[in-house]
Image (cartoon, rainbow, N blue to C red; front, side, top):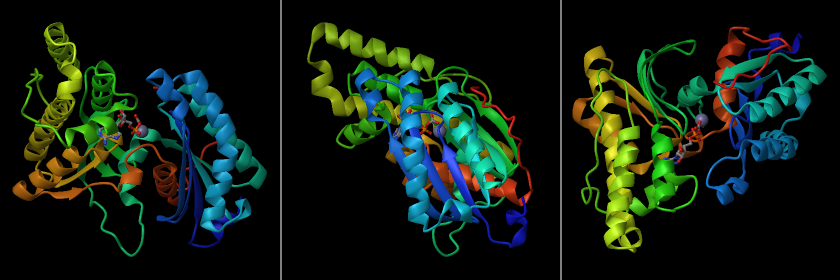
Length: 342
Ligand code: KG4
Ligand code: ZN
């Protein structure tokens, strides 16, 4: 294991397989060389991710995705200095595919393995550089991490020191988008569909229950119930209610979710007096969420960081950048490492 010690430049392969996307990326230090994602459309048929099918599709996709990423980066496997992979959290069967693949490849190439926490990687995606010297957040900063499984306000003190100061006590924000879409029969994943339909809707057409919980924690289960009841009651009077009000419903639901998210984030910024603020995770792709962060930031003098679209939802570039930070610290793992689901 000497290759990584040779020069200052490092090629890191990142592998992400925590849920339903198989992704491989190559970084040259913190600079992106390739980031490829194979989506699994099979889950749309079922209105959600089917774990058994996800692992199976990862197994089919992983070799071609890694192969294509290396080709796109203009490299061969022998050029790599380390392999970073998602250890968790996620679906165990899905994680096992990426983990086993990374171990085998690392062993064959005799290069170090780096285990990465998926959530920390979402946050560290802000440090992936495209071209030139794009600005990156300065430590400490606050990050609103909003994905399909998690909703957290994280105080990021360094790439290795993150403190969750608030989180959801029930559903995640992405889950609320997905479940709302399911109620309206709009397909899966719901977030992007609601975002699109909301563009032609009135965000104040409908009002829903908002949580009242202390501190920086979130709750979305009351909102979900409120959406369900409102739609159910209207459907009793008009069976075409959803079809007629689709855009307004989506705009109002989206508006409420973003309002709830921004309220606690703003409170944290105020109390901690940390004005560097980032968003990350799948829901950070949402147009209303992105607008809200920018507008609030301008109004309250925050320095805001919004990820590039391709780094919002699950991707391996974020795994590779998290791996790069660990690589610089020689923080490697053994072949006995096992994935964790939660
Ligand atoms: O981070 P991610 O890809 O996977 C997890 O780690 O969970 O997030 C997926 C979530 C899904 O719930 C999806 O509906 C949501 O992100 N999402 C969006 C948008 N794009 C993806 N939610 C709202 N608006 C979007 N444009
Ligand atoms: Zn994710």
